[in-house]
Image (cartoon, rainbow, N blue to C red; front, side, top):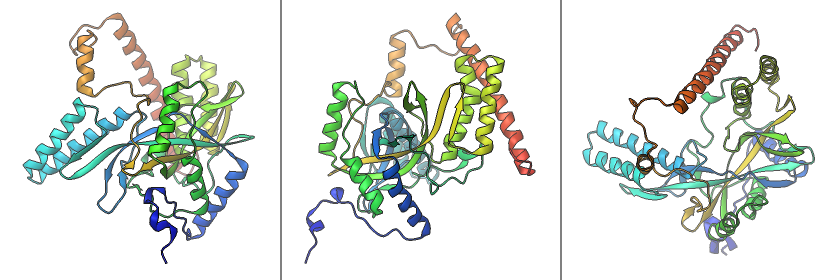
Length: 379
């Protein structure tokens, strides 16, 4: 006798399978506890975009890194095509080299979200992001979340989406299966969002009714005027330490640069960063800023033809690079390198020098801290 699933398309199925091993069991238990402690699910508002390759055996393999705009993912795909052209040239396959370069040229000129090259299909893929919220605020990292990086070294670890295949047929644990169902049914937008954003969300739920969870990522949330918000909405990190490292760099470099802090304020922010490094904590308060490393769930919607691409209402400010350059030239805003600097560009250069100085100080501090750890002297 056939099961009911035989008549249900794969993209509408959620296959719950036993998760083997003590770590998987621990993660499953934590997921259930998170549902109780952080019962509310909120959309982050800023999605991620990847380029993906359709696999012969089924599913779509994601690029390692994402961007916060569709055009950023298109540019990344164009770079992928150029690297493929280089590999074809090294292999002596001139026909393939020309095909890959032609595809890269199209990405520079046209807005393309689905393309075939030499029998392979590529697509720009949209991932929605969500956080769990409870009475005490957003959910922090869980003990079972991978967090092996040393302080200041998280950037050396590969993205957890490297090699990840979007395939609804892949089995999942019971807690993640229920979360996946919750997120697939989540259709909403921030209060006051433009009507087209809400309409796009409902249209996506209809056209892409299935979904696949990606590995969780981590961002920094900030308590502001009695409400929690994303500290940097476009930023996401593969590990909790990646988010801590990003926050520490903000405290030591970006905050002094952006807010023009005086010497006493800079010392206070730097000391806060030192405490963050020493304790590897997920919460921090400095100068009225209450900050928390926050766990972010991600979902790619799936329909009959594969994963969801960009929505018309998604923030996508820049056109392809060749179009952008042409527009700048037509508006008289494009300048060659040898043109004279005006007052505005001189100010920009001065700001760049100040930022570079702060960043060099941070690099020197990080190198010294790493050497102390090597010698066993601690952070």
